[in-house]
Image (cartoon, rainbow, N blue to C red):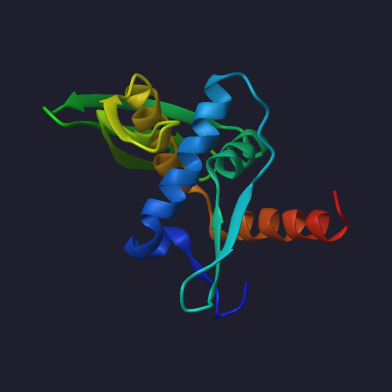
Length: 161
């Protein structure tokens, strides 16, 4: 990846965007749908190309590498959100690291009449656990594996697959 490309997980500015896109993948997975998008590519407001590995991409790498073990899951609740910390061990490199995530209990959406509605998010616990697992696994995967998967994904896209 060239120097103009900034990884999404290295900047707070894009955390919201990657979380939003990953939430969509998590919800699709909960519905039993197959998700194939391993990376996100988009252009920011300044015209810079942004590339980030998706929730599905992290899972694909973990499944291909094998040898991941969940050591612990700690789920906590505040009045407004769920907080989860997952500790994962990558047996391939004997690296054990945590990953954390927060998820609001309420979700705001626009209804068919254009009105904003705020309701309890009944998928909030599933989302926060999935995000914490994603973050824990991501922290144990060597960069070269992510770069290899990105190059493969890019070649498939260029061939129209």
